[in-house]
Image 1 (cartoon, rainbow, N blue to C red):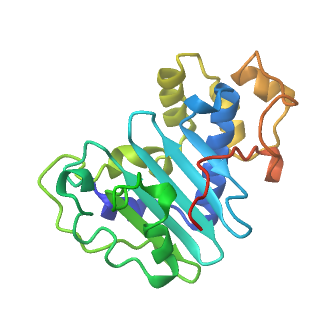
Image 2: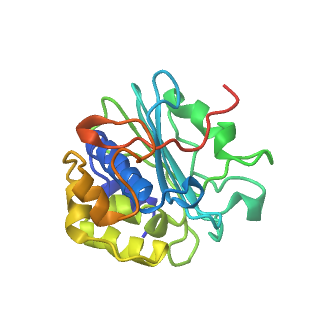
Image 3: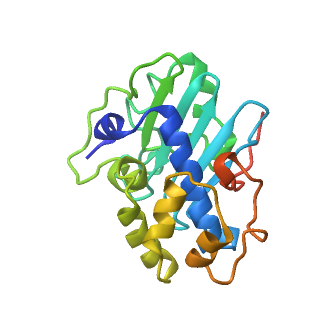
Length: 227
């Protein structure tokens, strides 16, 4: 699987945004310590932009900027043979065709570690008027999951409650209530009962992050820098 397959499997932008918010809410409930959350969502990354993020704490991550112009997706797999840290440059085609309206995100300081090139092995975008997700024309190396897309975006392309439950039980080493996961992913209003089903040590009032639509929590992710 490559970013080309991911482009065919990602949902429309509003659906993707809602799902990212739901993932961030689930992580905030299951993992009150923000340092150990895999998914976050910053509803106020700027006055006009929102940022959905994933980090596994081991060097793999993605960032999705939602803006009036559309959405820009950057993924980085630190073990990918396409890593710019292997070649001292971004793999040909990954960001070459990013449209001008999203070009500033390619060089966003928050999406690199200051070594002179973006931390990116997979990139997608979709303008507000587009009817599909777009990627660059890429000649992929012969490898399983060469750009990391299959792993990085697994909970965006497979949005089932069962898939997230299996992941969360492994990542957080706790039992995870499937009905409660379904409740959050369906964007139903959060209740004390749902929060307690996921984390008996947490209350709805104690859930960090400003309330979003349908009672979802928007949990702040990486800061916006350099602009």
